[in-house]
Image 1 (cartoon, one colour):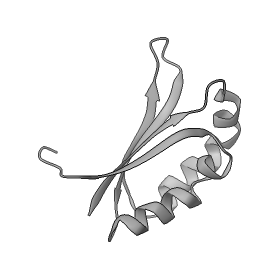
Image 2: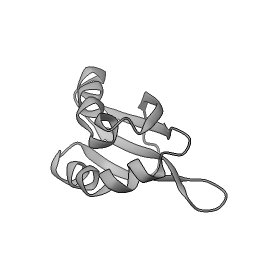
Image 3: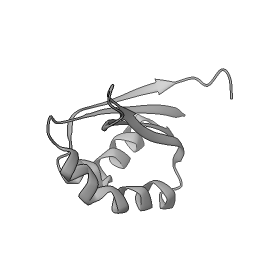
Image 4: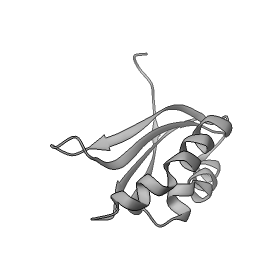
Length: 90
């Protein structure tokens, strides 16, 4: 099952993002669940959130993945949405 994780950073949280980025990227690479991932950007090109496509067994596995993400543990996000997703192209 593919799940889109769409997360928006708390205002002013760029330092939290930068501090935890190495651990987050390692988690993305090592978890085995990530199909695609990258930051959401504002008009100035600054990172303000995340878009991650997970390939998991079910939505509960997606929730567990999100709970273990170093960004989530650090309190970076104002919101996190987990939305089942159907790939049509790509």
